[in-house]
Image (cartoon, rainbow, N blue to C red; front, side, top):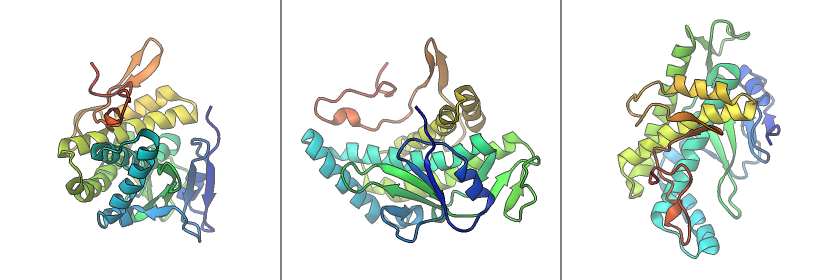
Amino acid sequence: MTVPAQTRTCDVVTPVARSVGRVSLYEGFEARFGLPEERGGWVLCSEFTGGPERFDAWREALAEWLREQYGEAPDRTTAGYVMSWYLGVVGMAGGLLFHSERRVPSLRPADVAVKVAWGGRPHVVGLALLAEEFACLPDDPEADHPAATVVADETALAALLRARFAAHAAAFVGVFGPTVRLGRRTLWAAATDALDSAAWTAGQLCGDETAGVADSALLLPAKLDPFTSASTLRATGTGWTRRRESCCFHFALPNAEPCATCPRLP
């Protein structure tokens, strides 16, 4: 069941802050505009992309948890988890507002922050948008706001989100890639999965999965570099599913099975 996310904003009320305040996410996942005075587990994405040390620390914390749970922590599994978590939350930061508000926020690393649960399983439990600027359609009720950039139509708005996400993903690939034994194709496959899943998941959370699927097709209408495929969403007899482009390497853990959408499965 989807419940309203724990949403908070800082004292500055902007169109982006209002958009974030209206979204629904997973129970226990915090979405906000601006950072709290006490940072806690919040980390600026620019602090991650500024050097590999924070990614190394994240993987070390994950390895400790995996060893407690499974007895082993393969390097490719810690790399795959962190890759998927990081790109997934950045994709969601854009896809959620695109689906729910037809707005695209700034996704520069300095304008996004993530909250990591450092105690126990160190997964992402929050996202924050930090910049007032946003792009929107001509009929947006706040299209005349000084922070707004108006684009012609939904296709142009989707292209802008795709470009902003790709720029952030490129910064991630440039820093994270040299520290792990994952090829460039695998890293961009994970970015493709994150973007393709973002609007679809937003549709599920906002109560209109089919509209989310349509938004995914807008974002990835074809194989567009640097992404590795068009949207892979497809209808089945029981609903929607998609073929993953990347692997999180969960299967490498002792007695673990591949995920249902793992590209290693037929």
